[in-house]
Image (cartoon, rainbow, N blue to C red; front, top):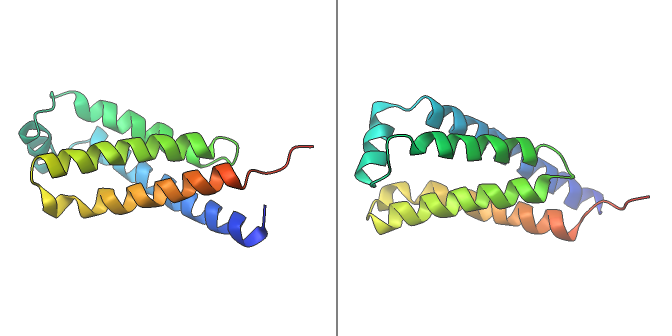
Length: 120
């Protein structure tokens, strides 16, 4: 892998991992505002735990080069679901963040697949 591409991929992956760790924490210990949002979107009361688990797993997978595509793919799926949820419910003010993170996750996914380290 070209060194600049590798560094870019690694940097973006670590930023995504930090984002998903922060998101997992926020979904594990849900604020009253986010609890109300989940309820307004029609999700069951326990669903934020599923989101937290997916975000935590994505963060862990993103941290290692070998598992990075899986973490980016899982993170992209979580963000696609978040984006669709906000768009379907007309909550456009909350659509920008998932759209940006989805785009970054897809870039990391693509770079991780196309620039895999050579095996000996």
